[in-house]
Amino acid sequence: MNKYSVVVPVYNSQDTIARTVERIHAVFSQEALNFEIILINDGSSDNSWQFIAELATQYPNVISINLLKNYGQHNANLCGFSQACGDYIITMDDDLQNPPEEIPKLIKCAHEGYDLVLGKFITKQHSFTRRLGSKLVGWLNRKVFDIDDKLVLSNFRIIHRSVIERVCQDESFNPYIPGLLLKYSATQGNVEVKHEPRSIGVSNYSSSKILHLVAIILFNYSSIPLRFTAAFGFIITILSFALSIFYFIDALINGSSIPGWSSLAVMISFFSGFLILLLSIIGEYMIRILRQFSSHSSYEIKEIIQ
Image (tube, rainbow, N blue to C red; front, side):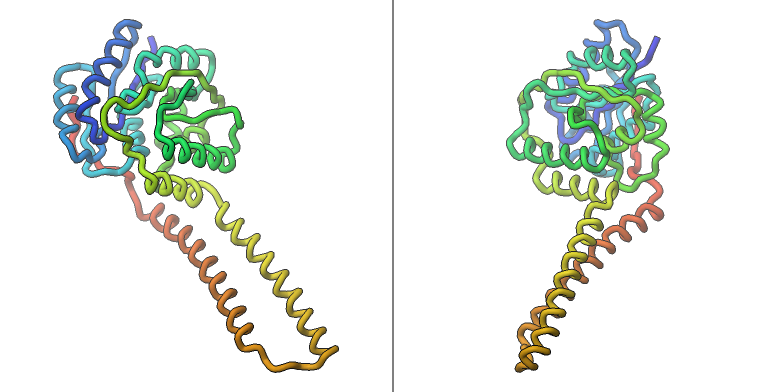
């Protein structure tokens, strides 16, 4: 019999996490499936750790992990992957917007031969800012990871053990879990699932976090900024060369005029600014390369209860 590991990153969810675990437990018990639930407290500022520590003592198949500080959802998921021992790993949010009752749909689709199945929400219940950010991130994913336009990404998914092992062996700094799953899976699919409104609190994904995620995708997994800057620089070079030919011919025909110091200053400032921009982008890549070699772990575990 296959075993299923449900990985749930927890961040400031003291009001929902107990109900989430209760519903997950009920679904798997009703289906008579072998399972475990891995809860990762990602530096919550409320009493989430006390709640999930208590859950680990109530349920024999619940493992609660307390990270040293807040490392972000992707690192928390990676921590859960390293602790999971199931043949399939399921990831979901801690706020009950991913109904646990939809998990059997993911399992059924995975058994049809997919090693990565992602929940496709029938109707998204996120805020406008979150939906807009998701569209931007989805567009970047399609461009960077060259995935099918019809494939919809979400955090509600089931992954085969072989894919998880490849992801855990990857030593990327600032891991981006959706990108790594796409990179190391051969067959991906979608299944329609419900998405429930958030009943308590507000989303932890702010505009700044979405922009940070966009930066991770761009600088960690693509060369788009460098290519864009190179193309922009090529255009400027062509225009500058054409402008120099124009001034040279004009000087031959009409003779030299009074030197245009203002124009010269503007041109020097413009090209200097472009060079600084280019060096800044190259520097951003260099910083990430140095962090890649100097960083030994994306997270630190403070305590485990099981």
